[in-house]
Image (cartoon, rainbow, N blue to C red):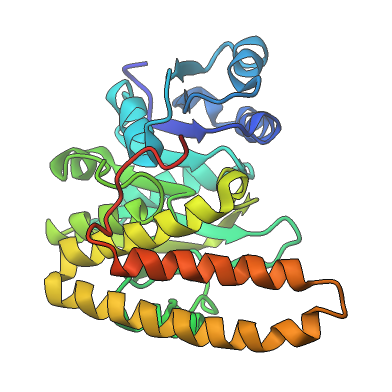
Length: 313
């Protein structure tokens, strides 16, 4: 489709039913004829590929033989994209009519805009905090002190506003900026790729905007929930990599230190809850949480804290 206004790259991993809902929402949009829709399946073990082939033959399907992560799979889709704008979309989303066109129009009409993301809502209509400030030592400390929202961009004003980065669940970027920064950084496997892409674009002069006037529905965490503990560890690894790449080795050590302090704080509070959990039959939940904190602590003290790739295998 050489004349596609934009290309939509949908990344899927074992979320067959959610993918079907996402695709139906796209094909229900009256502007769908202007789009190239590409599905990249990250070696799902369910029937995602068969479903997409059978129900949505008009979409382009890239079925990978192994899981190469969020960045790698999105780059595969981008290689065959023809649109002047690229929309990277998670399979666990439902897109309302008109949203994609509004985002594309915003990029066309806003000279300094390189990336834009809409407001994300949970299925119950509550707000997801999808416009964020870049990871770093302070945000890590706030998160472990249950003050994480202090490190988030205020979303009370729904007018378009520049932000550090928007969630990769629905991120639209001008092709020239995407190509200028070399696409998604494949040093990450899962998490923080969106922050890295927006930081790279900022480095070359482009701005990232949160587009509050329009929203989509995002289920959230559908793939990561299948591998909860590995996903938590990978999230920490990705934050460490981002901080090292964009803020330097001193900031990395500060982030590792604040993570250690935060884990110790959470671990002590969780251990104190164990005597209360025992008579309530919830001791297993508390012990599982303590084991999670131990694993994060081990990561912080390990020699290599960066993503090693393939954590889902």
